[in-house]
Image (cartoon, rainbow, N blue to C red; front, side, top):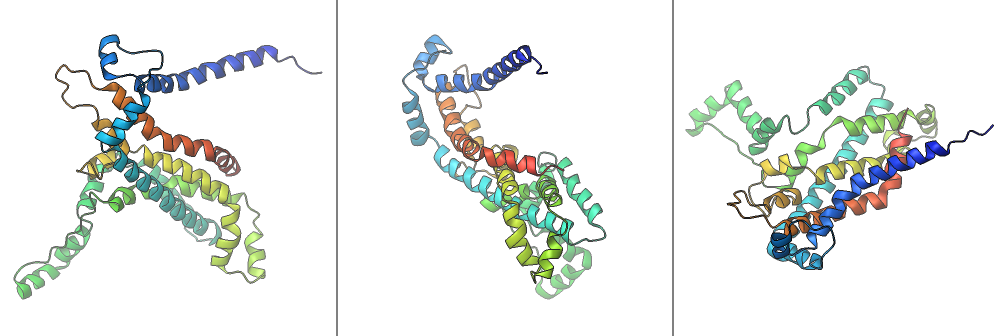
Length: 306
C-alpha cells in the first residue's frame, strides 16, 4: 500500500518556499539598493526595483575605497587559516586514532574544550600575546633570576619584543587551533576499517606513508568540507581583524565594509548604495566557493558521522 503524501509534499514545498524567500529576500534588496544612485536614494528612499547604477557603484568600490586591498587580505587570512587548521586537525586526529596513546581520550576532551573558548572570549589575552610574542620568555628570565645577572653584566635587563599585530601571521595564528576540525577528522578515521593500519604495516608502510598514501586520499572529502567551513569562518571574522589591525591596508574586507558607514552621521544619510555594492563584492568569493564545493561539503559532513 502506497501512502498518499500529496498534502505532506505541499506543506513541505510551502515551507521550502518560505525559507527561500527568507534567505534570498535580503540578497535581492542588497542588489536592488546597490543598483541605485545616492541621489535617488535620498529622494525616493528604499527601492524595490533594480536600477542602472550597479556597475558604477562597484567601480566606486574599486576606485575610491580600500576594499580591493582588503579583499586580498581576507583571501590570505581565510585561506591560510583554513589550510593551517585542516593540516593541524588532520595530524592531531591521526595521532589520537592510530597511535593508541593511553591518554588519548583526555587529550581529545581537552581539544574539544577549545570549542567553548572562541576568539571573542579570549580576545584580550590573545591581543596581549600578539603584541609581544616573546613576553613569556621575558617572564621566564625574570622568574629565574637571569635578568638580574644580565643586568649586572650588561647594565640593563634583557627585554625581548616581537609584535605580530598588523601582519598576516598575526591575523591567522590565533584562529588556527580549535577542536572542530579534530573532531571531524577523528569521526572520519573511525569510519575506516580498523584493520587498515595493520594491513599497511604488514606491507611495510610506516606511519608517514600510511598517512600520506592511504588515510589522506580517503579523507579528501572531509578535508574539502572542513576547508570550506573554516574558510567561510575566517572570511566573515570581524572582531579579531578589527582589534589586531590599525591601518586600512591591513584590515580585512569585512572590517573595511563596516568602515564605509560614517561613525558620526551628523544628520547625513550614509551612502547605502555604495555600502551594498561593497557587500555584494565582498560576498562574491564565499558564494562562488559554496556553489563550486557544495557537494564536497555535504559528502564530507555526512561521511564523517558515526
